[in-house]
Image (cartoon, rainbow, N blue to C red; front, side):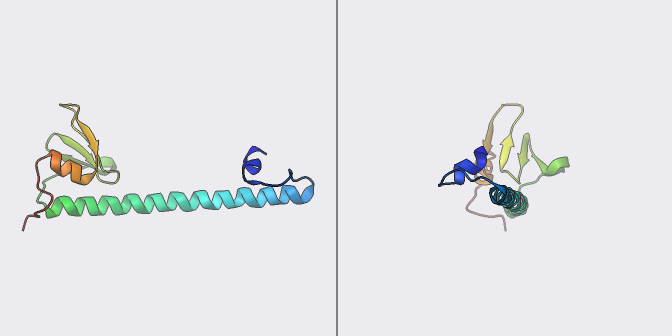
Amino acid sequence: MIVSSLFHTGPAPSGRGALFERMIFMGDMREVGLALRARQREKKEHNYRSSKALLDARGVKYIEKPNRQLMVGDYNFWPSTGAYYNPKTGKKGRGVRNFLREIGVSECNPAE
């Protein structure tokens, strides 16, 4: 297999034992893939919560839309990825701190 040849350093395995090794390897890859997807979900959830908390701490008013999208003035903001977009001007970017700078909110002094 192409996949196994990328990770196998010796001669190409053959026979029944080699097939079993590949099955275990592919099973391990599935587990790794599932673990990576779970980690991505956790990271997006963390980003979502921390970005919303940062907006709240700075006193930024927003409207929550479906798909975890926030409307801040003319901007669409997705806190899980940090992406933002202004459909009127076409301005887009990434990062909650860049977004705060873009909308003119000081990132250093939270609203008390």
